[in-house]
Image (cartoon, rainbow, N blue to C red; front, top):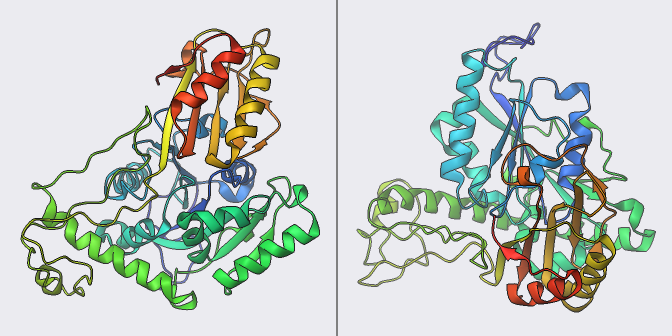
Length: 417
């Protein structure tokens, strides 16, 4: 496809029987793995011309898309929660919309799509949807799952978070980020652990977020058979979930709790009311295996939640500019006391005496060097130039965070978008 081509037009010199579907790369990785840093580096490369980027924001206030340097009509923000819980909504609509915009020549060609997921996303439902949803599978092909792994926190994350394990096990490529911040022994220990989880995935060490596009793209059609057996089982579970969804629709609804200490992910869909005897007849009729955990109950039961129920997200807003030193002292105490429970902090700060928004990013006990954006965003909610921080925590009450930061900054942060 050339710069003004529409989808499905073959590229010059392409073989007549070449797969003309648009390649999609799934960029995943646990919280704080450096996905946005990798994305910024990739967007500077000429190989990304004609590419669309979908960023899945987590929490009531989106931050990541403000940190992406190249923002235009080809960037789409999916902000209705974790992509693996809303995959039948935002993702499908976004990919359909991109294709139709390219067909109407509203985009300058659509050669590739890169999807950056949230750090808590399970890749399985996204992979299944790309491969099985009729509209998408005819027009897009999954070109690979690329997982960023923070070598400075990987061993702890893999030991405590099932999402991190799935992200590694389902990958075609493993990008070992922050290698410049780890010694050789730490890198070797992480590499050995990753090799056990996914022996077939190529490991690429990354320093400073710089990675060649060839290390990310061109993985080939996604094939679960070369991975650990659990991967095929997880995709099979997604086929069962997908079969249940239309049967349950109209009878049982999903809730989508968000900020203010609510659950960080929406619950999975309910079981179909018509399959109450545990036989799985509705699934067998659709050509799918009966689910072994379908309960023999007179009332419909909910599927197992996708995520740890103890993980929550909330947003804190400071109405007045902050003293950097006072805030830093409060943050240091917060991380010292509760760092093991803090999965991620990300946001923009209005620092007294600084006209530019300061970017704050933390993972567990680590605070990454602060940077500044060239200007305040001109879109809500940051257009009011108030400090906002998104917290993703496990088993940590919002009140504890408010108490510590408020005592050092001299102002009580509000729970708000």
